[in-house]
Length: 257
Ligand code: 1HE
Image (tube, rainbow, N blue to C red; front, side, top):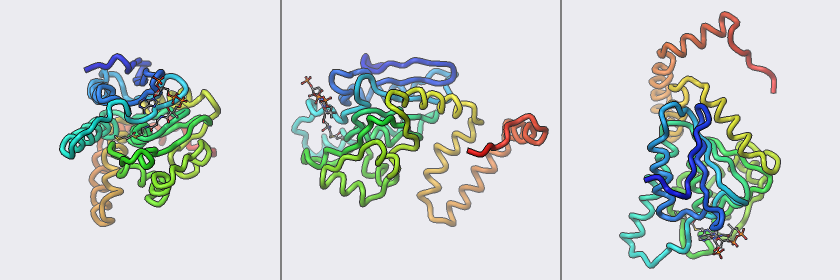
């Protein structure tokens, strides 16, 4: 169901999904997690990319600790699996998702950001996994996704020692792909989403659904899967038209950065 603390604003082909619980630093209650799942399962039809951000001074303070009750092992398992299902709707959903980060990106907030396809951080951003000091463990997919961004050794260090990465370090180690000045992460993320929305849908589909799976496959299987998905993408009429446009001088060249 739509959640009152999640705002959705459709701007052309881009859906802006905003966590709007700034008084609690956008802490993720069970309701908010289910609201995110609902939002990404029900993006309106013209949408071809999405931006996710957080209202107020922080992107997200992680799990709503006020809801952390005495759960038995079975309940804990179901709670964690509920997060997995919701964040999977983002990673393997219908459209690429760009996270616009600022302030705290911690605990479950970092797990949420890690499920997105591109992360843009402003220079107020900081990253931490306070689970280590709260006597718990990541449960929202962090142990799978975060080592793939920064490596197992860095994640182990963050959780064991409470290490906090600032915005510049976070970009250097691989949390964010873009580092921008204070207050501009949203604008940059929106501009990127508008650009991504122009791609052929099958290319975006391959990048979201095939690439991460190929990266997990043994090389021989990866090469084979790559051949399958590249043949499917290039067979689409849109791909043929885009290549023709370049050959006829109607499409942009690659320009030096
Ligand atoms: C919260 C939460 C929260 C703030 N759950 N209520 N996450 C953490 O361990 C991070 C905990 N939060 C913080 O370290 C800080 O709040 C922040 C660095 C994010 C922001 O600091 P600040 O000074 O701007 O805000 P604040 O004064 O600490 O918090 C403002 C209010 O938000 C306050 O409530 P109030 O009623 O006293 O005003 C805080 O209690 C509330 N608040 N963070 C609940 N997380 C799938 S498993 C994932 C496991 C995890 O994510 S564990 C890590 C949880």
